[in-house]
Length: 283
Image 1 (cartoon, rainbow, N blue to C red):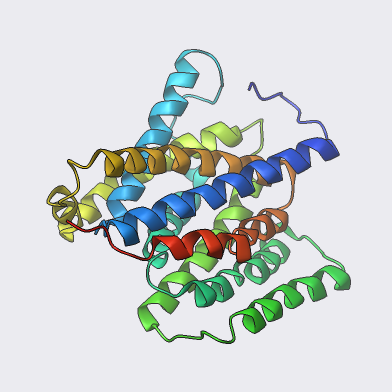
Image 2: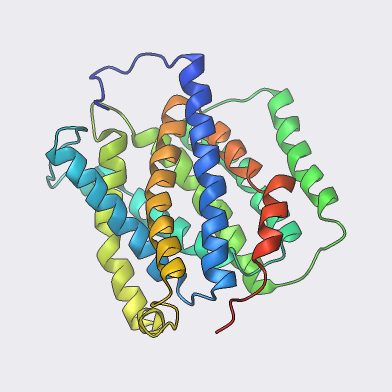
């Protein structure tokens, strides 16, 4: 897992496997989070995000100590190298977890598709990437197709709309800036993941405590439920895998490719599985 000093051009197989890895992790974590937030009624998506950040820090630090991976030690230049990724990172986490249980699945599908045109636009502005007219038309077709597919269930939920649109913007911006900052000669993908989580863990804990979110989580009635605890820990692990697979997919592909792969999980197969998680757990 060592990063070379000069990254060679990725092979087609590496691009494909990294996209499949990201798509699988993205699909699985939404299933688990949906069960936690909807089926069990866990009241604190922020605490869930904190668990995922802490898991990321612990795993990467242990890997670094055992020389499985490498990223630079902390110095005063790292915050400047990362900015604005830490802010986008926590915004993406919180808005993503909060939007999961706010909307019906058809409308959730529609609004999450806007990550793709946002990514295309930000890549053009920030990275100077130019895409052909065929790709632009394909992106517009994806969004239009999502609207048509959800036409029978366009429910209105202002809070849900706000959260999912914020998640779209944070996801797009995070993907583009991650692509920009994963230079192996600088922080590399492991350094970006590790320091992002480190810088935002304490502020997120402070937000959680000050808003009463942390207290709601500690008073949650299912902490003695073994199945709930297993799923909570699984979500934390999948949170790390999702962050790693996102970075890996962006490293080998474009940010637009990562956005398209992430949107695939909201398709019909995804809906069939999640329709089974709508009933709350009885106490």
